[in-house]
Length: 127
Image (tube, rainbow, N blue to C red; front, side):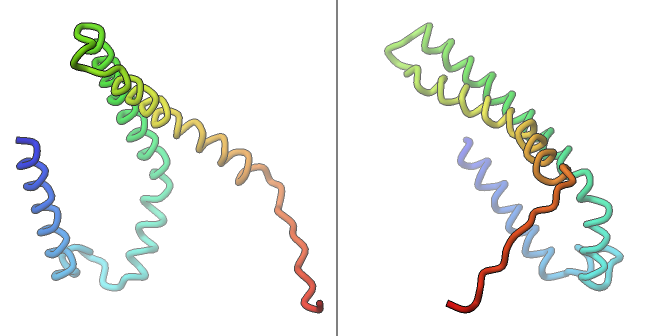
């Protein structure tokens, strides 16, 4: 059942991509040149991108944490059929995915917004 669903989703995704590339004027709506499309997307969509990615990470990480807890519950009920490693792996993965937005904000604040400019010394071209 899952394989059939994934096959259908993949098929419709490929058909949508083909239609988008075959008829770019419909896919780009009112934009006639690519440069103005890039400018519009960069000015309107990119400031909201970190928040959207953070939301995706929080939702995906929460899903993995709940899934890991349920796997550990299955292991507690019947250790012979369900290994503990599945639950622990999902818990670790969920924790890592949930921590991504916090880690990226720390990296962004310490590297990009610190106000300190990076300095470098050019290599001497004479050897």
